[in-house]
Image (cartoon, rainbow, N blue to C red):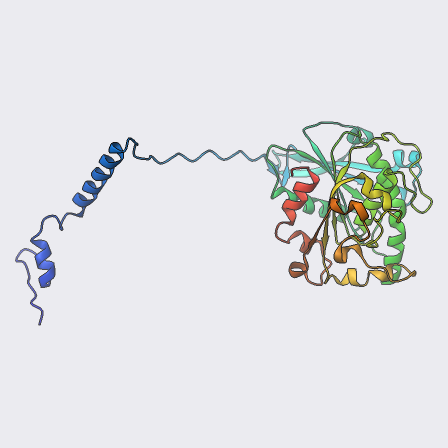
Length: 360
């Protein structure tokens, strides 16, 4: 049986071991032990000729640029829409008919709005410190949705953006609003991407040739991008060519294709978009073997049953294959063809930024 000792001046009982500890003054004052240990540590470091390490002050974080509604004030957000000109590729019609608006942000009101601006004024601006990125949306996007979708892509990129690198983000909008009949809708839009590719080629040609460009195309928008680059490379797109060049000598561009709704073999030498690869420095193809739209891509044409590039990436590239990096995102996206699902895949936001702004 344990003997319990109650000191006369202490109302709380102690057992025998605790009573023994109380008789040792060193055990009653742990602060003395801590002070002694610190003193010995200091003596040891002094004997070794080194000072006791001091805690370093944390470096001040880089100041992030001011934003309004997710838009950085130093960035330029521009919409170029070919909806008013339909499928016309006439240079004079494009010059006067393309709609160009700039997103104006206000730090005072914490809002942004869109103002009409001169097309050539935007395209011919050449600031080496500002990277230019184009985004071309996919099918069934109406006027108004184009701005929303473009800003979504822009905001995703800003998650990995360099605070010291402003960009000019251009949303290229084309007439892709939904029309009646699913099969008719797909085939009409597939055919429409040919003249739209010519329109985009003309727009890109107005930009000075030494400006580093990055292009992002989603679904049918990827088809528009490679068609435009094919024309810039001197190709013929079903009878359409870029005859009068404003800047015939152009630096290679960076490209990201997301769920590309185009034939997998089109980028091969001598193929339908075969000259596109001559204009590309590096390309990322984000693919999905489970995408239901990519699996039924063959319905977009009555001729044969071609494989979609967005399933497994481009094929038949020959020596140009080294320019292409494929990434399969099936495990994240599944059977969906929703652009937001693709943008939510881990790492995609940073890849968009690194490729199109030449951050790599």
